[in-house]
Image (cartoon, rainbow, N blue to C red; front, side, top):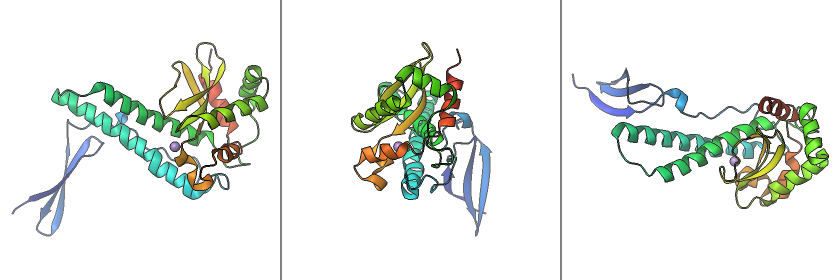
Amino acid sequence: MILSQSNTIRQPAAIQYIIYWCGNSIVYILFRSENVMADDKLYTLPKLPYDYAALEPYISKEQLTLHHTKHHQAYVTGANAIFEKLDKARKDKADLDIKATLKELSFHIGGYKLHATFWENLAPAGKGGGGVPKGELAKAIDAEFGSFERFKKEFTQAASSVEGSGWAALSVSTTTHHLLINQIEKHNVNVYPGFRILLVLDVWEHAYYVDYKNDRAKYIEAFWNLVNWDEVNKQFITHNKK
Ligand code: MN
């Protein structure tokens, strides 16, 4: 009997398998490998907390599907590929361009994390999305900005004026416990150490081009109908423990 190996598949899980052809049958041989990385080191694409069409008419099913399954997935894949590269280099005791590798990794992890936060920040309009902040967050916004309207104006200006591709974010300082609006360029530039991100708006063109073409302002205006303030308030309470 001749077994011919046709394919070896590397899995992120701690199991690899080899497929052999044996006559007309396929035989899978499973084995554990010490070379495979631990599952908990790798990223996976989180499920959306709503259907792809649930944010219409403000974000279309087509736009949201592309954004989640293509763009967000790309950061998951990118981060995991770098972890595998680092793992292999360490095992082989090989040199890497550490500066370039870490820069690329921060881009992908930033992209992964900001998108995960963005999905959680949104809810269908009128069903958790839109309206005004409540609870502790509402008080903190009033104390910092004077009013919700002033906050909304500054956040909108931050989102409108991010150069190139980037994000607007509301964050809270773990040192002073004050709120801060920040712009994040790409996914990783202008992130403030010690500030926890509570609310983000993706203003990369891939986030709105299907629906709004180059009209970023119209997309930002639509965003306010989808903000899940209950969720943002929960994040604020969680990350602002004194
Ligand atoms: Mn995006």
